[in-house]
Length: 336
Image: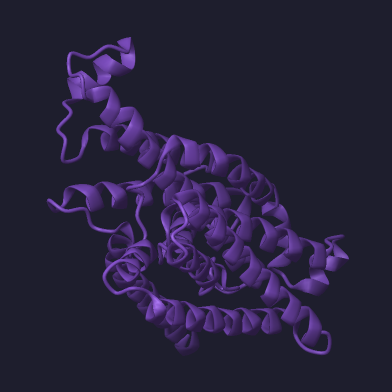
């Protein structure tokens, strides 16, 4: 399948999933009523407009944006670090965002304050990791020191988050913190998305444009420099954009794991290693998968399941399968 056909097909599948998500849920909306409303703007059901425009449409946009952004960031990180086990939270953005949100909930801030603290916490964690790597990494492997700095910062903010949970009121604040950490699109609104989407685009667009540079970077720093790529500037750009999109979506949806790690592998299996194709396909695959996960989260049971649970239940077995396939392939190559 050609690259253009693959992208068009992925876009068509995402559009079909988006339409399906509008009439699937606990409040039944028939396909005929949905298409009539979309075509004419009129419906005999007085609640239909509220359900579609105030509940399901914001969730649709938020889930597609979150899944696409996390998958895109994961794919870019995996290409930059030349490591298929890297995910968007490698530098601590998730743990920092979780700490910021928990602090805001503990201070009884409104939803906008929780999103601001979450975004600030995620960005701060990455900046601290970068600062540590810059300070001690001059005489060592820069990539290795950067990854180790991210692990240290993730552990630190994870400990601070545990401290906040220990100090929280177990009857009020603690359940709110735990539920937020599970990830959900239930509170998504067009107002919040209006603030987040411009920031998201500021990170997504540059990442989409650096695909060929990531291809060159995959050959190693020396080869990339010989072809005119400023590897230091390239890493800063990818880290800044990936951090921006990840922090934006975590601020809206909470922490949703596995998507940024697993979906790039699925996209790479279909699209191949060329990042000019892989990055947009990762975004479209991630948006589609996250949208389907959100539909399952709100329709499987009478009570809504946090979408982070759905992605973990489905993502972990897939990753185990991928690990098994990779191990088998490596063993076969050694035998050959």
